[in-house]
Amino acid sequence: MTAAALPTSPTTGAPLRGLLPVELAAWAAEAGAPGYRAEQIFRWLHGRAVESVAEMVNVPPALRDGLSAAHPLRPLSAEVVQTARDGTRKLRWRTHDGRAIESVLIPDEDEARNRLTLCVSSQVGCAIDCRFCATATLGFGRHLGADEIVEQIYRSAALAGRRPTNLVFMGMGEPLHNFDNLTRALTLLEHPWGAGFSPRRITVSTAGLVSGIERLAALFRNGETSAPNLAISLNATTDEVRDRIMPINKRWPIAALLEAARRWPLSHGRRVTFEYVLLAGVNDADADADRLPRLLRGIPAKVNLIPWNGFAGPEFARPSAERIRSFQERLRTAGVAVYIRSPRGDDIDAACGQLAARPAAELATIRTA
Image (cartoon, rainbow, N blue to C red; front, side, top):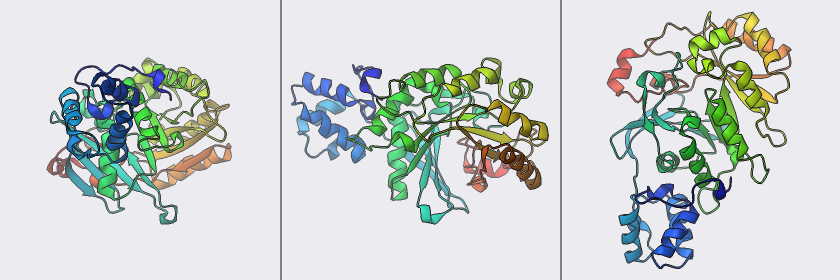
């Protein structure tokens, strides 16, 4: 992604860690500082992830004072860190205005691969009312700023003692609903002066916001830079069922969603991921398993089957292990690359669909068996 695709003039009071290099350069020029100060400041913010401007020791004090006065640095504070039996860690952060958000650090089950995935939130709560998701019960609070998005990565890395190898925008919120801050965060994370993440190591997951998929795809169709990985939460093979469990389908039905997936810019060897949360008696029938390959025909795709991760409220159930394996086998027989995603961190409500930023005592009370 190029900076030209994003706004280039910082507004007064814009959060410091959310500023692009070109915006820092503009501020430095207005302050009468040499151009190289922008790179220095950016490296402190995104390479070393400082928590205060005072730590920028090679930046003159007067310039640091001016920077602090013009643009606040809003570090997240770690409120709760929970560790699951499988080593997954859920990190609850408190924002500058007192909101609670969560990130999840997931170590690879295969230690030889030495991968560490971070599940990143993009909103406080969520406006997409998926019936099987705990985050949806919170409603929509607000968008996270780009600074709050990237801050989760930097603070999580510090807590883990190592940098995540993979980032997935699959935490609280619909990333494409917060489009401007998402794309700004991607630019910041991929910049070589900072964290320098490869887009191949970043996945943006959407509940099916077709306008957002198309808008994001348009940024990468010129081929100058690679798009991040795209994951689509499909979860049904008919509009009737998807309307019921994912109301967003009434605006963008399955056909429109799949057409957007077909137009997603994929570099060589990459595929669109389709997430399919299995709900007993709702979307796990043999007929669903037989329809799914037909729907995905012509799309370089893989399917992640996610047995539903329970929480109190909705009248759903996880299918039996036998039913899950049977569903997988029917897809595999039809030539679909399909994987079963074992729940990670479900004993601390950190698994897919369980993030709700509730107090630990409340979670212990409402958690389902």
